[in-house]
Amino acid sequence: MTARESKGASGIEALAKTVLAFDADAIPASVLTQAKLLLLDTIGCGFAGVREEVAQAACAVALNMGGPLECALIGRKAKTGMTNAVLANGAAIRVLDLNDYLINESGGQPEAGGHPSDNIPVALAVGAARRRTGRDILGAIVAGYEIYARLQRLMDRSGQWDGVTASGLVAPAIAGRLMNLTEEQLAHALALGLARAPTPAVVRSGDISAAKSLSNALVAQSGVQAALLAEQGITGPLAIFEDARGLGSLFHNADLATLTAHLPPDGAIMRCHVKTYPCINTGQAAVAAALKLHAKLKDEIPNLIRIEVVMADYPVIQRQQEDPGRIEPASREAADHSFPFIVAVALTDGAFGVAQYENERWRDPAITQLMGRIQMRRDAAWNARAPGAYPCTIRAVDGQGQEHRVEVRTPPGFSHSGLDAGAVLEKFHATVAPVLDSDARKRIVDAVMEFEHSSSSTRLDAAIAHEGTSN
Image (cartoon, rainbow, N blue to C red; front, side, top):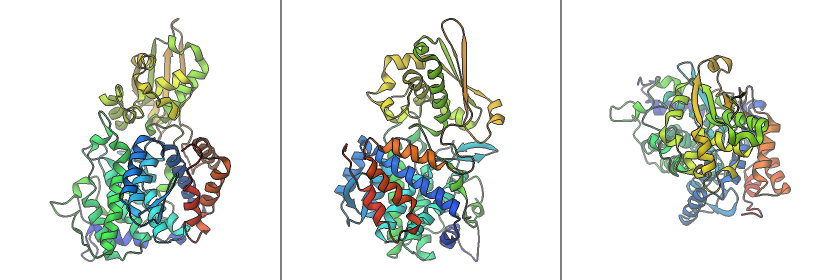
């Protein structure tokens, strides 16, 4: 990797300078609206996931570790310290695979860009602890999204290391801005954060474990800890990019100038999409297509003798279609990344939500039999017809030999030029309704949508610290 040199500065020092130079006051109103919608969607995902086993376990650990009672936990009255709040909220937001996603580009083709909202818990926790304004917190989120997107593009997403590794830099960058660290302190925070961040890709492949839901939260928690240590004068390896024994090889696709360039006020955050269904982002259109086919055939679904699921011909799709752990999922984490499962259960039920995973439906004979009739295909024609997206065609043949065909170019929640506020609000209310009544949901919506005018996060913290009647 080529180091970016500026007056002898290392790449880490140049990145620290870039992060602190970002001007939150220059963020356009449209970008602030996008950031607020993504914040609302993220909080909704947290409420939806807070009762899941992995989220419950992470919260129990976070509360047992103690710390100052300064940061709110989504869906809980208890408070905890910064790093522990990042762990608990990060797990709740991620566990259902329902939070936002970014589609990057590699070699002119769409590539997985990860879930930048995974680091929103950092902004909420540090912003609350340091009494920062709503606009400060939103600014840190916008900057964090851009850094996250750049790092994802620099990584080999088909390689040894998982994309959450990037959060080893994103989390201390967000935290450092909100802690008012100096450039020198932030550089050491970034170095310390990255030194703890490398996460193997096995967390998201094969027989997927609960580590998938926790991996970013753990990296982000370490990143906030790194910022706290740097604030106390602890140093990190500033040559972590350039030294032959460092971690420059993690980000091998370009030189550091790509990472440390000026952060625009309207960058990657405007290219994010929200999920409608709790499953992998590349499968959103497949679920939408399966639901269309169910509406067309209804009770005839069990009689289908062959089902072809045709997706765009991209490397990321090929990797995911051919991953053995996703073909025959053995866990909840693998099931929500399994194209055959999500298509089969959506075809069968005519619905797709958290309920479709209950009672280990991926082991249900009726579902597994239908999965056995599914053939995964790729068609390069989709690449040109729906560029920059993950479209899907389903072709099914019934017992009389008649073919039925449906297609979805872009799924609900896909953003062409900014998110649809109505769609985000609709998802939030539908997702959180099982946990909170309408008044509690309205308090959250109002607090988020007026956040840039808030002198602190106190109002929002109070709104999200609501356990609801179902918890």
